[in-house]
Image (cartoon, rainbow, N blue to C red):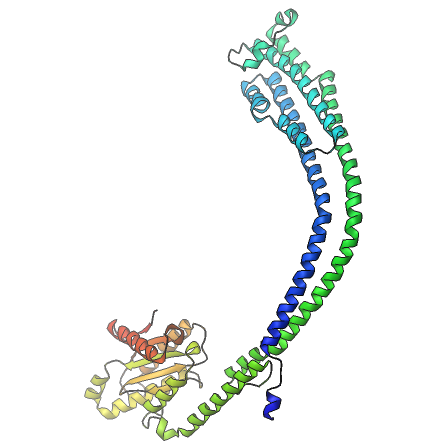
Length: 448
């Protein structure tokens, strides 16, 4: 392919400029749309909030009234002081009814609704007077001495004062359960309903006006969303085509140890060409190393020269380095002779090949020191490596081939734990030394 054809493509700078322009357009459309919607929704939400506030206050007023009714009825029936205490805690301390009236006075947009609510409160207060009288009858019937100060001002009629305790209890119960009592309760509810109905009527009128204004702006918003969607899809498409897809494709080619296609944006094509040149040099260098120059004659593993070349070209981010040392190898040579020691070395390499992948590199860097580079290993594989080492030691422990038992100590480091290849070897060697110090026939992972 001619050089000028390879250099064709859109620049990442151009793509970046398009993305900025697209983002500005999208942001401008959405800000304009949001501003218009905010104006329309403001009145609508304000009225709705007022409605919710009034409805909540109305419910609280009714709940408080029902709560007081429950407590006074229980007190007149059972005569227990705890119901009286709970009644006055609500009436004099919590004051939910008064708080509801205050909130409505601050936020109500309808005087008629507020007046109905105030009427409900007045009926509730009238109801309390009847409840106070009933409570005073129970206090007199039970002979209670310690009761709220407000009830001291309630005086019983001479006729009621003369009643027997049982009759006082009966009359107290009738006062909070008779038709007159529930007529007042109904008046409270009717005024509450009238208040809410008036509010709903007011809200309906104001909402209709706000919705009419909102309709036209929603049409504009739909158009803005369509334009926004088109711009986003275009940005995603061009970014994927010229940036993301070429990078993903390049990663797959690197994993498969092949050149990178020179496609995509100009900057990426430049990087691809630079990588491919380095790749060609790397392949040529490996090919120039003939087997005899790069491999150990005894074991067939890479020799020191091959090891140095591999070490200088590995990818630290995806490589494990394992340093093997045969335990007590000198004793094997001294006891069985150097010929047997050489066979043990050959056996070790065979065992390593059986337990590692064909892509991994096995190197002999000293008398009984071996290195294995586990490449294409970006993830932590501790369990897998541990299993391999155990299998290797088990194989070396076999004596069916006539060779003495042997074992290895191993140091292990992943390239992501170091800054350069020098540190990679030093840390792996230190880990192997720790393995030997801890009793041999074991392994150690280097820790950061």
